[in-house]
Image (cartoon, rainbow, N blue to C red; front, side, top):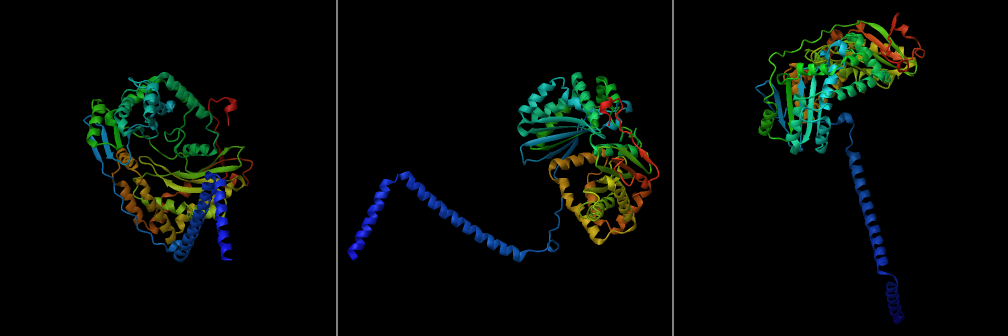
Length: 521
């Protein structure tokens, strides 16, 4: 019996040896690897299950309701280190080093704006800014500029908006001198090529032709006209006729009136050494002659064009209405700005009164908002609105009006006040997401004559705001009796009709002047 067992083992070994000889070596290795892989996979799965189980048990044991969470207080925010100096020609310069990435960007603010262009040539400022860049310089054509910048993944841009002009550049640190030189050329010696102006005018006319395609665009454009007046620089619109009147000489004259070193604030942030940057700025801008006769422009006066009324733009193709209500507002330097901003927090957001009432409870709109929206150096607006079903338009407007009045009559609760203040203060950190943003804010404050620590004063004022303050500013600054109402929608589908809001509903014709019949809307 014992011998038999031994022989059997030997036969088994022999068979295995023979099998090993019969099967090729790569296949054997493949099988062994598969077995090992399976074992490793099983071990990994077991480990994951064990860890998941442990973490799940720990999470279950430690889970808390969000109201029980203890969050650390917000850290104190401080301005990054920066330099400010003025060249002999009056150019104001801000420098802020940031060596996190090998990048440098800069922006120049120019004291100008499309609010200063002649009414009969609306569009002139925008053309001036655009063609400054696209039209080339005395030393480089437009194509040459584009090629040099594209080879270096850099950019130089110019634009003129409502209240200021701006020119900017972005470059790798190693290309700073070249790109900054081009930036200086665009600012100092643009040629305003005629063909580029012609192209810009053609593009502007295309935009005019399409401006009635978007109902929200119609609402925003016409609402400004109702508040500021159709001829106000803060509401007037570019038209075919005003585009046709703009000539190349107008661009040159507008540029020569405002683009001078003592009318510009330049800010640069990024990976550079301040001493070398100072030398580069002096080399590129130091010999630019100042204009001793330049003066701060006189701003257009603002007065309400309407103090109430219901207005309507009929768009038969629409299935919903775009609604805006409001009146003229104020400026950022108003002592009550912080309390008004807390009022915005009471009205807006997922926990705000407008959302809770008009969306959640009444189901009148997917999005609804209301805010006191100031400006730096002229009155802004108080505006509320949203989009709603055609058959709910009247109900939506009445609900908006009711919530505005409720802020005056019903004091905010402690919960509402805490929500509004916390959301405002918690978002404060986003004003300092990067050095470039911080530097831009400093430049903007100097541009408009605000103190450099304006934002920190605002932060303290928000923290000190009380429920009584919110109700006081709501009563003082919101004027329900002077609210202007604008609806863009389908007149036939709006039932009940808008006459339930007012006996007289004034229609607004948005036909584009000078357009062909097929371009009308």
